[in-house]
Amino acid sequence: MKTRIDPASLVDKGLELMYLRGYNDVSIKDLVDAAGMPKGSFYNHFKSKEDFALAVIDRYAEMWHTELRTFLADKKYPARERFSRFFDHMIDTYENSTHFTRGCLAGNFSQELGDVNDVFAQHVDTVFRTAESYFIHAVRDGQREGSIDPKLDAEATGQFLLNAFEGAMVRMKSARSSRPLTAFRNLVFTTIIR
Image 1 (cartoon, rainbow, N blue to C red):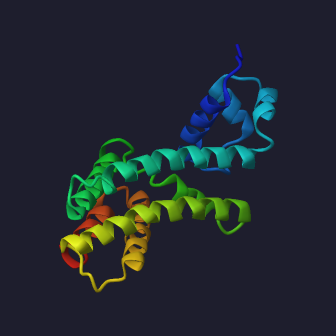
Image 2: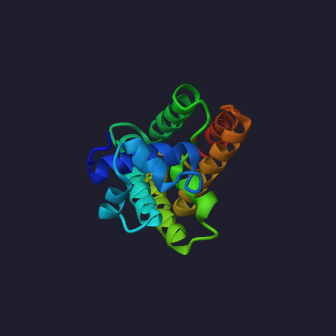
């Protein structure tokens, strides 16, 4: 029997489905079936599938930015250790929880929709810019602490770390292995963060 469900629960169900299958492979019927709600109820909360997916990426961004804050902004650890803890956590998560299948939802949406939907491209870019700020601040901390060369441009280095990690996640998914993430981590800790 179909029941009413609150929009936040629907967004959480949609996040699960779209994380696994992508935007294009998830229909509104899939969403309401997963949530156990009548299809008409969907439109009481969201104008369209695109509107809904923007709420999904916002929910993902909340979770991701909380994770970034937890690992990269925790000043009780030196920046080098923050980066190490973050990358190790991510590698462990992909190895043991998702078995190399999910990657980053913002990255997935960017690849799937970024070049065909301006609204999505701008929305996801905002999510990335916020994420990048955590990397940049941790790089600046590392420069002050001496684990990152102060001659490096902190903004460019933070952007590079995020962008390269996102690329390693794309490779991880196709390789079904942590090798790309581990190679990224090892290179970062022998060339950028010491």
